[in-house]
Amino acid sequence: METVVERMRDGIDEAGIRRAGEILRRGGLVAFPTETVYGLGANALDADAAEKIYRAKGRPSDNPLIVHIADWDAIGKIAVDVPPEAKLLADAFWPGPLTMILKKSAVVPLATTGGLDTVAVRLPDHAVARALIRAGGGYIAAPSANTSGRPSPTRAEHVIRDMDGVIDMVIDGGDVRIGIESTIVDLTEGTPTILRPGYVSREMLDGVLGRVETDRALLSEDENLRPKAPGMRYRHYAPNAPLVIVEGAQQRVRERINALARENAEKGRATGVIGTDESQGCYTNALVKSIGSRTDEASIARHLYGILREFDDSEVSVIYSESFDTPQMGAAIMNRLIKAAGHQIISV
Image (cartoon, helix red, strand yellow):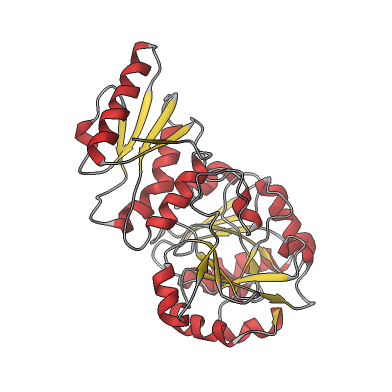
């Protein structure tokens, strides 16, 4: 299969959107930009099309797909018994990086929901994405557009590396704005519960709903504690080399990483380090990459997956990362790092 690339870095190309929409309507796959990461889209109401996503990604079939819509009114077709909290959250955060779990209607195939009787719904804050959703029929199932388990794509080049020759089209919208996936909140059982942290923090949700819980398995260092969301049970975001998080006081972290890098160098093993603008000059015997400044958590989130992918182009044997406790997105950033590290954490 030839994968066509449509360039839309400077805005919507109406002809290109029509071509992409036609692909989706006939059951094909189109990767497209959102404000979070690139998504791999298919017609959410077509079971065969949804199953193509699982095959293209090598994704477990019990891992639900998020249905992307372009207007609030579209929710009535795919969800039933929509609680008032959903409209409150939509008014506050849509379009934007928030996914809501609702009870699904009969029109949504189980292939899209991973066999569950609930549906995950999001209205993205990206003009190209919303134009594509409308052109493709209004309901686009779209997980991240990467091979399952790999770091999510934040630019079209990442998608092409993983999906060239596997999907019909990639819409190149340039670098994404946020860089980590949407927050997922479950509205189907009692107290609203965060199943995946993201840009929209618990504090922001609390400000709208008054009380929100968080699945306690999300940031646990215990890999045997099972998250409620099926997608959070699998290893994700992983670079080729093993990744280890080193957490603690910053000076102690730097000392431990330098000691580990020195030991690796003596054994002829190359070491990678994920640091920050403030710390990258503190490391020796390693290939050091800055993820951004600790004073700018948005840059840390935006660069995370790109940094992980950059190490795949090097020959490092192991990667050590500092931990990142930032005010709004710290939980989301650390959740992704812990998953990428397979829960390998050194505390100092």
